[in-house]
Amino acid sequence: MIQPSHLQQGDTIGIVCPSGYIPLEKVQICIQTLEKWGYKVKLGTTVGAKKDSFSGTDQQRAEDLQTMLDDASVKAILCARGGYGASRIIHTINFKRFNEQPKWVIGFSDITVLHAAILQQNCMSIHGPMAAAFAKGEAGEPYIQSLKQVLEGAQTNYTIPAHPMNVLGTTKAEMVGGNLCIIAHLIGSKNAFNANGKILFLEDVGEYHYNIDRLMIQCKNAGLFENLAGLVIGGFTDLKDPSSDFGSNAYEIIKEHTLGYTFPICFDFPISHSLANFAIKQGQEYKLAISEHEVSLKEA
Image (cartoon, rainbow, N blue to C red; front, side, top):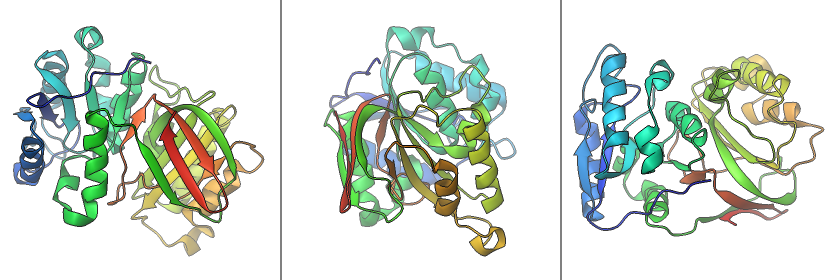
């Protein structure tokens, strides 16, 4: 798995919106923080642009992303937000120049589509905070700093308290994943996730409980869980209905559909659409250790 070069002071980070719309003013703190860290910032044409719920037409978003991928002076690309729209343009993206000069691509949510395509290039990317997270103040600082550390080459090492639903064990493997809805959406496509022998991580937002059940069934029936080395379940936040309507909460639904598997499983890891969202390298080998008292995830 190819790892892009880590950033140096004075390097340029491009900011683009390949999916949903975000007002320019909501990106300003992100820009200021990146500059404070010592980086230059290049804004894409889609940042602040709007076409319905998107940050421009499909063609505009594709061209902006392509320009950033091809620009040798841009050393990393931060997606300003997720939303919806990346799957409408991913088939038009040419990774030829990107493969010649790989760079970090950062984001989560709908950006899972882009992560999946980059994994197909045998290259790492970063599942982590986007522009809005930079405005969360002191409470969000650990997660923003985790992104800074990854960009600068520090080895990630996260430790959290144990969750009662965890399945204990230790494993070491490449880690891939992202938004559950998007991962299910990609099944059957050329960018479908290959999780065989890997640690898979999942999170989601704004779903109905029955839809989490349906998405888990789809992934299970497609064989996504058959040969996992481990499973990390992040946040399932801002759900649209009470768990009593379905009869189980999100974690109980996931627990039901993973019964019988022998790989370690961690619940409530801080990867999510909420404030708690540590940066994770897609394609990086991690050691996942789940004990009765804590969970540790660190680069192997």
